[in-house]
Image (cartoon, rainbow, N blue to C red; front, side, top):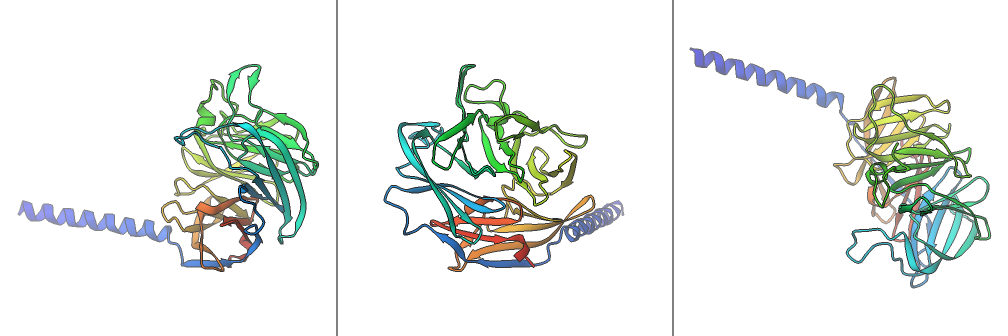
Length: 343
């Protein structure tokens, strides 16, 4: 008798848990998958010389920025474990800017540069911002000044220390420079005991002067790794970070809002009004579209991107893109679409 009662109790408990799981699944339900086919708008395939290589591409609110190195890149040690900040021999780079339709606007050659760059951006002052993601601290007077700004003639105009462990770089509508940091840039490496990027996210003016850095408000933890960052058309800054993997919005008045995402480790982030697009960590080829509804972030559908050649465009070839623009680089071709195309 007691055994029957115990068995009945266990069955009832399992049924309750199953119902709760179904409720959770329904609350997180994604309604279908939308596939977008994108045409390449820029093709460098026949324009690169033997040793040329595309090092970095970024999409801002007005154009596409491409950085090409004209010699075999030496970015890592032989075992691949450590990034090389400066090469032994100088090399030449080309900066090429296109509009959002793929028309070339300008081209600048930067000669005899020792730094290895990881990020390329364009300032409203018509200057070129190149950033090396690593910076070594040897002494107070010997630090790699790894953010370098060039004029349209390829001449160095100014430089500043942006810190080590830079994850991403964005330029907002006002021309301010935003740098996000991964764990080594936050906790320190390469000689840094007091890392520049300890807050995880910094805003600089175009002179390299710090004007803001992240401080968590109630309900948020300190950053250990800033996985993704973007800026929307209203110049609000959005970011997503470990430890909590919350989506955070910083408005122009430096007021913070945040939402729970229930996605861990996404490395891309695009914004259009109340819609948010992030890559789906556990589904490598798909992205997830969210909608902000008050204090909730609701999943609405999966998004899949592909080229007209039926090649997959995913987080592996995603380009750091401003706001609602979504860019990919695959086989020296740049593909560009916009969140407005997601119906």
